[in-house]
Length: 107
View 1 (cartoon, rainbow, N blue to C red):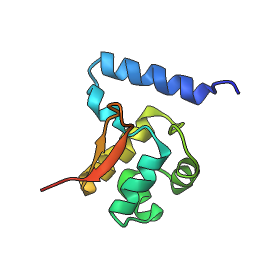
View 2 (view 1 turned 30 degrees about the horizontal axis):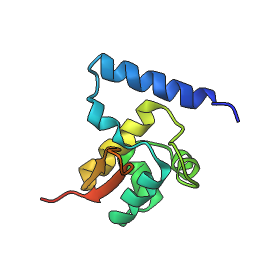
View 3 (view 1 turned 180 degrees about the vertical axis):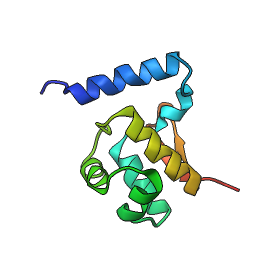
View 4 (view 1 turned 90 degrees about the horizontal axis):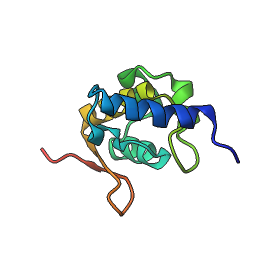
């Protein structure tokens, strides 16, 4: 299986965004489909509600959530989803040997 353009562009875009200081390295921690599903489940949010809050098309969210593995989408889309979910009360946990994760933010 070859690496698709989307995955290659995500890695390139992410490195460029971090290097250019447009985003911090630790903000890139939403990388997995399972993180997206888990964050939405923790918040009891529907896909429709996430689409409205993030400005990401519902069809895109439905395409991204199923299965396992990397979120194969544009960095801009990942950032919109991350911001909306963090604003709603979750924290994304960077991969630190145990794999990436998500949890509710303590207030």
